[in-house]
Image (cartoon, rainbow, N blue to C red; front, top):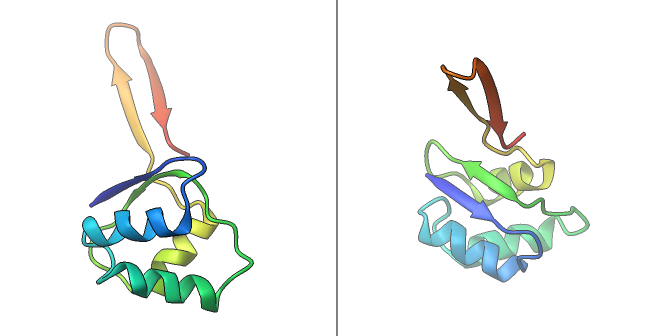
Length: 85
């Protein structure tokens, strides 16, 4: 499951994206986790989740900026580039 959180997204919008992707059970789970752990800054980026997770676990990953990284190899150019962190 991939969730792309754009810069400037509100907490409510992030909660809806996570619920729609099946990462958390409902937007309310994430919003309650956010209230419990307020003071942490949520980071924009593309996040990959292997499975549904607890709202606190997801909040921790997004606050740390634990984004997905993809590496592409360009055979003709002999170079590689990364996307994400």
